[in-house]
Image (cartoon, rainbow, N blue to C red):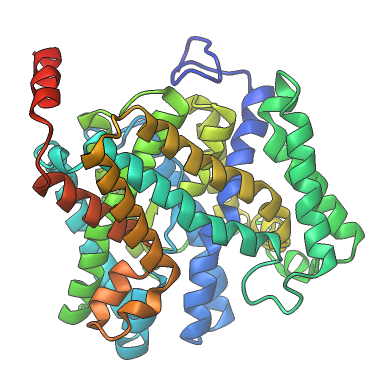
Length: 441
């Protein structure tokens, strides 16, 4: 980290005046996604506002801490890649079901055990690597992009559940952010690299001018407060642990897709065994630490994969400044509140571009594969069934609850399962396999 480096290289130090804005750009991309799962689950379980604020503060601190571990691994834990961590929205449905039946403490107890399960899985990524050939990881990346597009459009309209969803003000703000980004991407240097950040700032200012922002939460928040571990007592329920454990196995697939998306979209190569293993293990450690601080599982954020794909900025020092800013937010509730009150449509203009670029990255990765009759069939069925089920989750309504919770969340897991099974069972072209083995030899 001592020698100077380019923002487009993994290693090397970048001037702070350039690194800090680009790091904060990553924070802006994930901030709402990091706090939304807690707000939703706490609202569903009627958790009091005092504890809710404490948990949101903890989520900032944990996200920053585990992002640092992904960037600068501790032993085998961490991918040494520009991965940004945060509270996962994939667990909302399972957490809601567990919380309604057994209480919030059972969610946290199951998260603690689930983190250990994913940590254990990280050790075995290498022997499991045959389940993640390029054609499968490409389809998972494509599925991640497709599943996030509706999320981006919901942000664009003001956020799912907003009373004024789709109002002209929200559409104006989202469109303004998008146009600013598109214009700045035509330049070179700082304006290009910081296009997302500048677009969001302009959108936020416009939203304030349109009286769309209520700063009451900012005024009422404290300037300084320590993150509070052990705020929720652990409760261990076998059914809750099994349900959450299955979801941790499923989210491992998404993390592998995120890591592959980073290396494909930002570095132009496939992820190594070491990167996949370290990234998944950091996911597990992150969720374990998250449980200690009473929050939902902590995983890699696809939003930031999209940002890396758009900007090609992969420098770990740059992302580290964003991680430190997240930790600062964990100690300064007022600073967190400034981001919390930002209308979702501000992020929406940027999110649509970032999420679409994840899809483009997956398509680019897939284009490097030979789309013969066999592979075309894998692509068709994996996307058709996976994304189809993600868009029409009711098709699994009559299945056991655990099936619906896993496969109907967003289609990513179903895409992976279909692609993996077909890749293993469909006969391969013998001539192509022989040529591939000769090249590898």
